[in-house]
Length: 289
Ligand SMILES: CSC[C@H]1O[C@H](OP(=O)(O)O)[C@H](O)[C@@H]1O
Ligand SMILES: Nc1ncnc2[nH]cnc12
Image (cartoon, rainbow, N blue to C red):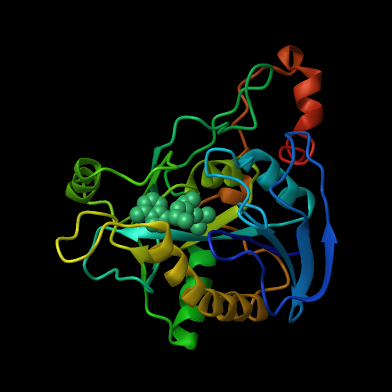
């Protein structure tokens, strides 16, 4: 039995988690580098909750500069079993308007400048990613959104671009034509790393704009994103508080196998493994190493 600990990574406009009680700050150092900020560790109801501002407080890190590995590793070290990512995104669908929450369950990774695995030379692993979002965790978010009267939809594909620039019109039309639902700059490699760390992952994609494809809306800019993200912050806090209050004491087994993702995933023979890398993997892969 594993005690459930809920992790929250807050994105643009979400640098704190109102409602978190008995809070202490902890700077967790990771062998993969510096997390974006100190973890804020507290509780909501009976659930232990660990909050991290993805870009750091004051929004210091651009999507390409965030140390995603350190962030996820720090969450793992803090005991997080279930991770909810809160992320601002552009929309490719008329019905996903600014203020709407999309509980996406698929990702297309178009990033190219980020460390996207804890594993590598001296310890090679391949985890399954077909179903990157934990359906039970997502169900809990959906139930909470319903109870709080927040307009949301379940399912959808998120394309993660490198940024930091927003997309060109041609890119935007291409993603829309491919049937993608929303666009952001941070969901990948976060979701991949959570899977490698055997943390169940779900994402609340908060629509802030229509990117630049929509004939009746101005192209996206930071002011528009920030204005909507700030309006959404209170809704997000209510949503997370509800999820946390209703969270089970013990981690629920994930139907996608996220909590057992490393079973059989490591290819490198024990005799060929690099002891230095194994040391760094103590938290992420300690269960199987
Ligand atoms: C401020 S606009 C672009 C920025 O906002 C989103 O951040 P996050 O996913 O952390 O909420 C987007 O991915 C970009 O990083
Ligand atoms: N249109 C957009 N493209 C990429 N990231 C975003 N974050 C918020 N809106 C976005």
